[in-house]
Length: 82
Image (cartoon, rainbow, N blue to C red; front, side):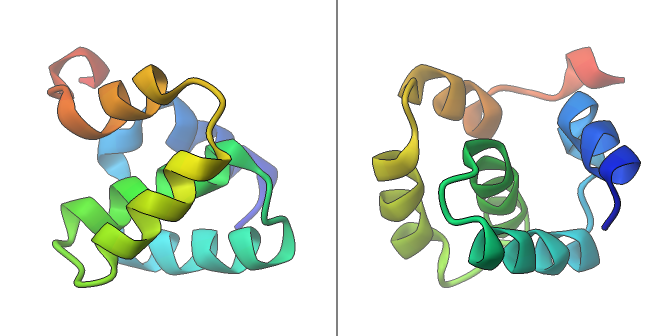
């Protein structure tokens, strides 16, 4: 995943695909304190109804400064993105 693709995902999180979620997993492995990558990976896990979502939610919440932003990313509709 390149910088342009990552920024595009941040601007339109509803466009996140399964392959991009796997790419975000690699980014999180390399940069474990990168909040935006962790949040986007978590959104991908939630959207795909992954069994590892609950475990990653706890880890991501612990690494997030403002949890209200994480909540909005995960639980608000993406109608504003379209």
